[in-house]
Length: 229
Length: 300
Image (cartoon, rainbow over all chains, first blue to last red; front, side, top):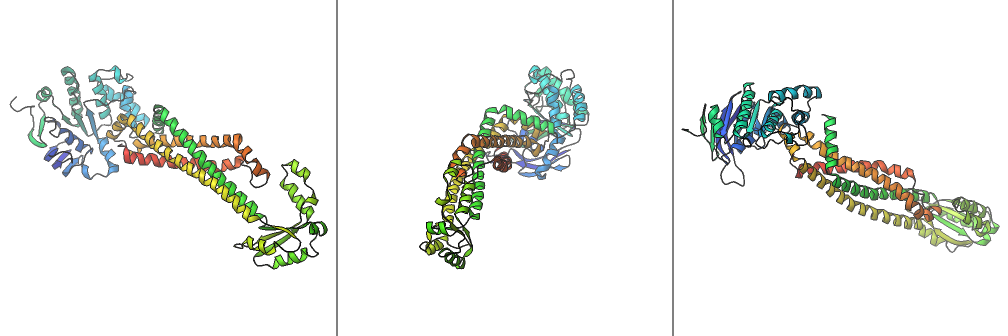
């Protein structure tokens, strides 16, 4: 589903590369934690998958698309197949919960009857049925992140990328969000999650790819956050 | 494409940026009013040139003696003068008008000025030979050649007057276009600024649109339409301003010229003629400015 082949990414403003000869392969339906300290290259890794950035060297393949070579007009098609969730939720505060989720479908031109059908379904999946008409400001942090996950998942992407999705949440809420992500992963969606949260990584025992100074220094099939913990 | 979604985004965008939108509409309106005025002047100049050039290029006014005694130009010196003129190089036609005909012509010309019609008398007007010249013939040469001939009171070079008047009207047009161009430049900067501000205000929406796979076209369209809607409203306001200017100032200002038969008054037909041009210019310019601003300055 995802393949990075000898990928390097350098920025003019940085002395050393953000990613340095990284090769990683992720199968369909896998759940992968991407860990490492700040500046280790996690965000660049995710940005390459979304074609927010293009590699300086190497190939990035997502769902059979060579992302770097993708013509500009085809990039939206890639992004329709790759959902993303962020630490800061990025909800539209002037829209209700269901409008926020529907927005992701409206802007890609989905018909109204499809939107009316799938939005309540996905809100039920993320545990927000009954809160469709609430405004984001009326929700807790965990609920807001559920809305963001619903929005990312409503178009049934092949890959869901999460950049520190529990970074703003307390441990109990984080645990709930992880259960939700696990449930989404069980539907066959490949999940790549960048995180600093030791306890989540340790408790879930999923594949862990650790980056340091732009290099992959560890790739464990059922890893924990720190070696020997 | 969801038309209802795009239109609601456009309305929200215009509402959120209301002060900038009003500034953009007003500047566009003033600029297009000047452009419209310039276009009306061009139209009037064309009409004036056409109507004045339909008249003779040179008019040879005959003296009192000839005017009083020779109503058909069959006696000397009128007949000889006429024949000489007809044979002169570059002359296309010569038409004689006796006092009565000149009087009738004057009455028709001053149909809107009864006071002049009242005092006009056939005896006060000279008979004339109306001479039409071929292209590239210098009327001054004819004027010089026949100015001192027997029976001639004076020779009037009509084209000289037409050129002078057209020159003055063209100066007015050029001045109007220059100010319109400066205003248009200000309008372009405002459109560009407003779009940047609008895009900044909606960066969360556009960021999400980009991430969920909305096409660049879908993301940019509301901003482009905002610019075009403001431009079109500005152009409609400009048409309204042209009507107000016509009614409030222009008709009175132009009255001496229209009464003298030199210009036709600015009519609603003239305004209707330039209006589609203004709307078209506003749509194209605002759309193009919006597109370039989004491409150059805004990451969507």
